Image (cartoon, rainbow, N blue to C red; front, side):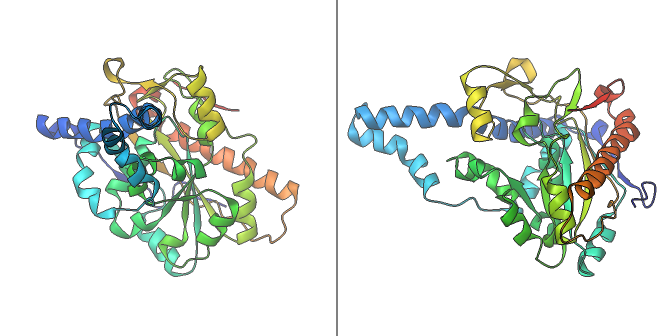
Length: 329
């Protein structure tokens, strides 16, 4: 079973020494990812109308639609080389990490054939903690793919922008194939609560969509891989989401964030608040080729306990979370 206090490693923030120009660059970087979610739906709709009515002319409408066509016919491509250019985002958010399994141990275990499902919660509107973790990670850790709904990989523009972080389909079959790889990139990152958890985002309450999310535990038991629970403090507070209306309904059906949200100045600019990536110890799951429902329920309950422990242990380090309680739905 997991040993939570072994090899804790904390990467402190350096917010007090950040020049204004770097803070502004971080704001711009973070806002790009917010804006792509806001701009993509109206852009796609306007392209369809422009092509349908050939407005203002056939040539102009085709030119206007060219980014959409280019996106449709290109795949999402990981771009780990962009991490350095995106690094101001770490300072904008006052990003910090607390690891109970260090990168060195994670890497060593990968070389020995151990593979992990890195289970992250909560999702938030956009996982800015996850983006920061990718930017700050060592080069080899950026090879670890993040599993997302197939709709994200099929949505034009969005798939190309977010695809730079190394995305893969969240289907059970694809995750199993990823877990067969060797080394660090034989692990996979998943967001357990998915889009359903997005609509539980709140600056007042911390709620996880977890009680009925057990598939990842079953995969881990079947494939003989371990689960590393992670808590992403700040994901639910930097942006506020519109939880009703046609776009919210569409987001739920497509499993991709297409609804309106806001942050600083009531604009789609994320709030520059403290973010903390807390990575727990591996849970120590056994290999059970044919797990029963009781097996799955047992280790799912232990995962819920670990997530709760991480939340309670580290929430004091994040000002907006000190007085929050965690609810599991």
